[in-house]
Each structure stands twice: as C-alpha cells, then as structure tokens.
Amino acid sequence: MAGNSFGKLFKLTTFGESHGTAIGGIIDGCPAGIQLDFEAIQNEMNRRKPGQSKIVTQRKEPDTVEFYSGIFEGQTTGTPIGFVIHNTNQKSKDYSHIKDVYRPSHADYTYDKKYGIRDYRGGGRSSARETACRVVAGSIAKQCINEIDINAFTSSVGDIFVQKPYQDLDFSMIESNMIRCPDEVAAEKMITKVQEVKKQGDTIGGTITCVIQNVPAGLGEPVFDKLHAELGKAMLSINAVKGFEYGSGFCGAKMLGSAHNDKFKEDGSTLTNLSGGVQGGISNGMDIYFRVAFKPVATTLQKQETINSKGETVEMQGKGRHDPCVVPRAVPIVEAMAALVIADYMILRRQETKDW
Image 1 (cartoon, rainbow, N blue to C red):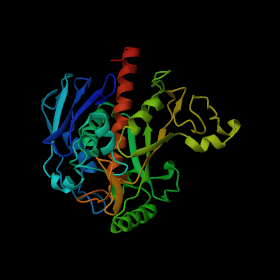
Image 2: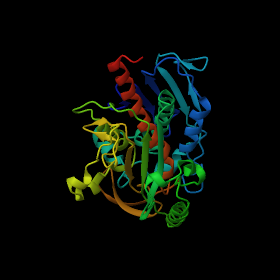
Image 3: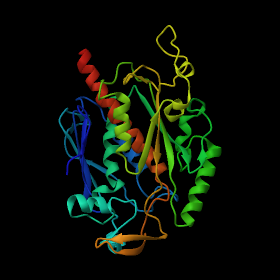
Image 4: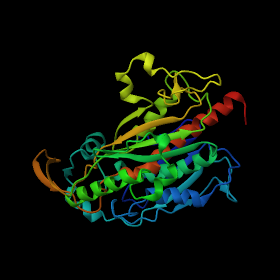
C-alpha cells in the first residue's frame, strides 16, 4: 500500500489499523533542539479521542502516546521520531456481521476490489482511527512553529451555521462546549441537532473553519506546490471530507473582479482578504482561512439495503459505537494537518533564505 506518508521535509508516515494492536508513526525532518511540551501533545489527543462527550462515539480509548526515538531529555534530536498509540478498547465482534457485506459509502467495496482482502474490523486501515497519528505529528509541528496561531472550529452542523465572521469570534471559547463552536447560541442549536439525529439512529455532517494567523509572506512553491493546493490536499486526505474552499471560495465565483480584488495598503497588507492569505500560491502575510466540509458518517444504526461480496442484495444495520457527527472530533485533526503543511513550508523557506 502506497500513500502512507505526508510532507516533503517535515514528513509523517503512519501505520496501523483501527482494531489492530496499535497505530503509530514516524516523523522525519523535525528540527533538533525543540523542547517538547508533552502535556500539550496529550491535550491535543484528548480533543480528538473517542468517548469524550455524549455526542461522539462511546469507544473508550486513552490515546496515550509512547515515544520510542528522536527525543532525548525532552528535546528533539533531529533524528526520526517514532511513536505508538496502543488500541485498548476494540470490540471487533461488533463488525462480524459485515464480514462479507459492503457498507454503503464506506471503503469496504473499494478496498476489496483494490487489494483482494479487507480488514472488516472497524474499517481497518480506512478507519479514521489513523488520524490520531496525525494529531501527534501536528502537535509537534505546532511547537516547531509556535509563532504561528492555528485555530479551527465547528462552523456548521447540518443547516445550522455560525453567522458571524471569524474576526468577531473569540477563539478561546472553542473548547467551552462539546461541539467546539465559539458562538454559544449556534453551539446550543448544533448540539441539540446532533442529539436529535443520534436518537433517530442517523448521522449528520457539517463544516469546520480554520484560521492560520501570523504566517509570514513567502510560503508556497509555484507551480504545482502552491500553498493552498497543499492545504487542500491535506484536508481532503482526512476521512469523510467532501469539500475544501479557501478565501472567498465558491462565493467568489459570483463576484465581479472589481469587487473581489483586495486593495493594498502602503505596508503591503490589504484592506480586505478575499484572497484568503494566499496569492499566486504564496502566502502574503494576511490571515489564511479556509472551510472544510464533512459528510454525514456513513455508518448509521438504521437498516439499509446493500450488497454482499457475491453481489447479492442484502439488508444490513450498523452495530456498535459510532459518531453521530464527526465534526467536533475532527477540529484538532484539521488543525494538525494545517500545522504539518505550514511547518513543512517554513522549513523549506528557512533553507531557501539560509535562515537557520
């Protein structure tokens, strides 16, 4: 299986399956001499882990990280950082009924067709359990670029949206509620909606907005390695993501150029920021902001018609522990992937300018 690594200079490779012994990864290219805050790393893991509230899956995993290399006396050594997260609460019997059945909108069918074999226990390698490894690496990446602020939050659930621009929101309120929305009024409506959907045995999707601040101008490599293109790839690699837009996004397609252009100020900043902090694929020093769309979780507790490995029509029903809405747990994953991209380009920029 190819495609298990992300990044060029600051590079993460992950391994493991949802119901295997463990998941883990190797981070290559992390600069030496970074004094790591292990409590901060675990806090990021706690934001992603299952069982954290009544509106997420009730699988109970401590998600404690064990580091095996690349760190000495709390500092990075510049060598590969190896880590493992042990799986402790697998209930593989919850998936025995789908051993030969393809769940609708899952990777069951495609994995079987590509590899001729699939791990049906929780989706195996296709499970979002793998994203815990990204959060570990993303947390370390954040500490490598601690001058840059990365904040993501739930901006919609179903048809309930935050109506305020991000500039009017207090990011310190993101962790004040279980849906991770800094708008208290919208958050209450979102939580109620998720609870209603959960009672129906169904699921619901939503969007996450991410804002990256204090990014210096000059990050990004034309032509094929544009900064926003790499951010898009990072976000679209996350399980259940169906869309990515940055800056004015699809709304910008409705505008005239005269209204869409960001007018410069004398210091090089702009009066507006419809560009989303990126022009020509290179950061311009303004805030980078984007939105990521997550589909409803494919596993529902309602009965559905599907096919089995013989092509026969069968009826199936989800069992076990599943997220009614993946969005609140995906917030730290979005931040982690953004951090990996920015850290990668920051290291490249330092090499280009010989600023070590």
